[in-house]
Length: 270
View 1 (cartoon, helix red, strand yellow):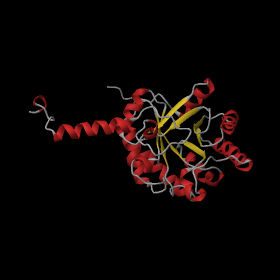
View 2 (spheres, rainbow, N blue to C red):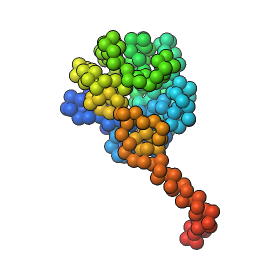
View 3 (cartoon, rainbow, N blue to C red):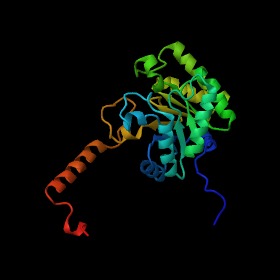
View 4 (cartoon, rainbow, N blue to C red):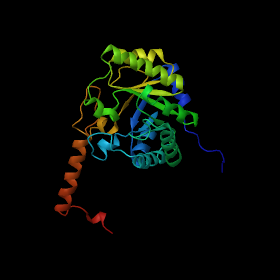
């Protein structure tokens, strides 16, 4: 029996190599063991344990109610199902803004209790002390700029961000700041495509878009791209299946079979 632990094929260093080689990075969200295992075996590069679980799993309107304990639960479940992909866990709202010591404590808990590979934080210069403290502990950090869902109550809308020159200039500045501080990658959400290209061209770390144009990689919420959710339909979302309809049909078929005594059949009984 080998004493050397099995290493995952995708690392933060590997992502940078992919950018240099012009190989696009594929990233999706997952919140449980079964979905993560299917994604990993399909060849996904990065799995984000997103606080979007608040929306698609828990039924909240925003990501704000998500707790650290909840993120640890989902992160632990996902990490158990993954052998190859890089697993990144969102730090939820209230666990890093304005208190870098709390940010480090939160990140350490995630890394120790989930066995994930990295954490993700939303924001730029406003949270840079938290980013620095987490990085100093040896924990990889992915940044997140543009539309930052945890700040929805501040902005009051999910509209495209950084359309104005002043906000675009700040986003570029924040992106450079995050890279210079040591972030290994940045997600840019719902920004003009030209701005996304500019950021990806200026930075040496991978830029992953969700409504950010043709950058170094893409990320979508799995429930959205599978068509499980139906109410959320932004321009950047491509639905690769209609599982809502297929699941509904399967459930109805099962209900009919039970009601008609067709299930269980003779061969399905002991």
